[in-house]
Image (tube, rainbow, N blue to C red; front, top):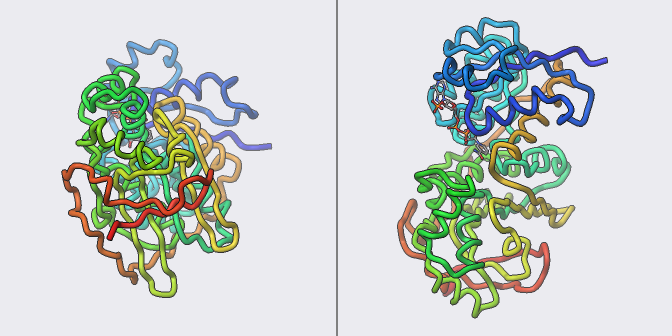
Length: 373
Ligand SMILES: NC(=O)c1ccc[n+]([C@@H]2O[C@H](COP(=O)([O-])OP(=O)(O)OC[C@H]3O[C@@H](n4cnc5c(N)ncnc54)[C@H](OP(=O)(O)O)[C@@H]3O)[C@@H](O)[C@H]2O)c1
């Protein structure tokens, strides 16, 4: 018999409102219902409460202290941004609450400190939703493949950019038209620059480097090349070479030399690869282990409903075992980051000829992309 677990939500936006919907419709959760949804914190709580009479049974507040001083067991952070979200996650842990966060920026920049704090407090900090939306890559890397020595992670981690690039690929439309379409479908924000420029994906890649290789990597150090200037003609070039273009996040680690290669860039991928087949807001990853070989994961990477699955899964994991001891991560900063020959945060147009395909026809294959000589 599982004790009931009281849940508060910080932020009633895209993700927060989807989580609230799921928590108030117990039939939507395919298990016994042991989550009690009790509080919502939002800066516009009065207005949003009035617009959501179905959530009248929940305490709404615009005072964070009301949540911190409440008797909730778990706080879901769905505010976004670095501050005040990072401070509120720390405050929640200090107040004896476990935390589930969807916030890649907080986890990438403050995850090590916050996970240590959680361990010290005997509480849990879970963040499946911060990487890959509904694609359970955090658990896959941190738990499912923990018995292997992971050597490489290659992934599409930004649903917005993927929706835009796959739309240009499918229709030959311009970047502006593809962006308008993505916005209309709810896949892109008004300002998608952090998605297209690789900012979002590199925060997620930094988290994965911690989980996969045990490295403490500031996301700002990961070189990125923007996908913002890709044109239909770039896709024509890629097509002639048997490929298409996707924004990939790549990391491989040479344990013997303590050398990491990591980047986020739009690159040519083989037509038959899992990445070329990833269209719309989907995400995909191929994780390579020394013993397990390649493991592929695929799923919807963005959107409230899909992301709420990851949040609910974390909530259920905490509720099932609230006393679980989650050890603090032991990450090293003693490694060399291989320099890339393109400028960080560059606006350079894609030069697809920079990338040569070594393998071109394997499904879920190793997709090795090297700089052309
Ligand atoms: N959307 C996705 O598909 C997705 C997928 C995976 C992960 N995530 C992550 O989930 C988090 C939330 O994203 P989202 O798309 O749900 O964002 P969002 O729609 O902007 O929702 C954020 C909510 O928090 C509120 N808020 C922001 N700052 C606040 C503050 N200082 N005090 C009180 N309330 C505050 C906002 O209020 P206002 O309405 O007044 O702005 C809004 O209701 C982010 O970390 C994001 O990276 C999102």
